[in-house]
Image 1 (cartoon, rainbow, N blue to C red):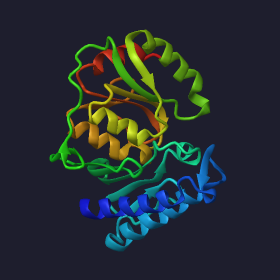
Image 2: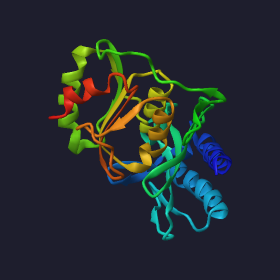
Image 3: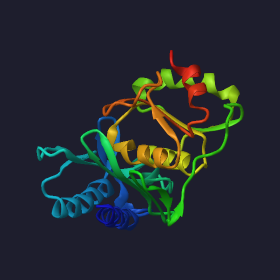
Image 4: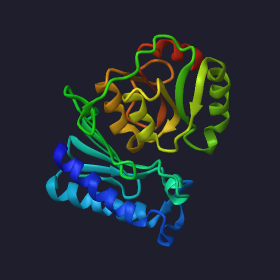
Length: 253
């Protein structure tokens, strides 16, 4: 399954890179307040063709195609181009995110950043890896001077995100927005950031990243410190050591 997911991610990445910095990468419009490009659609086709050929009885939930019901306990969560706005503006922080779940339990996840040639992978119980090197979350034990990656989810949650920023800003060395939720999770898993916070995120954006963080030794919850539900909801992903402190800071926001 992992080999197939990697193959699919590489196929999507090849499509995306063929459009990057070209005039054909123009926006096709918006869908649910998100930009859609030719690269989104063609990357999705490349990814889904591989997954559906190998696993025809598995369900799929992909950002552009929506939910493809196969009445299976196995479901693939796919974002064929996470960071479309970055991509369309020539910013290289974009990725392909592919995850396989059995019911609500993650089995494996792949986040591929094709421009940077970084392949993040995770399997349940087998750890998280970047280009063959094992990943480990940061060792920071105090929220003071932490590095935060954050996204607001959508315009409707911008006010809440601003409150969170104001709350965490004085305690942080830096707060960044990469523009790709999958990469932001990968940064926590690799120790490049201590915590990722988002409001009202979609499952296909973070399902692979969730397993990356967990398998690298981190922790995932909602803003109240409860297990993250498999639906659009607030999420905290951290190194685990500062997690309770983060929950305390923002649980009522």
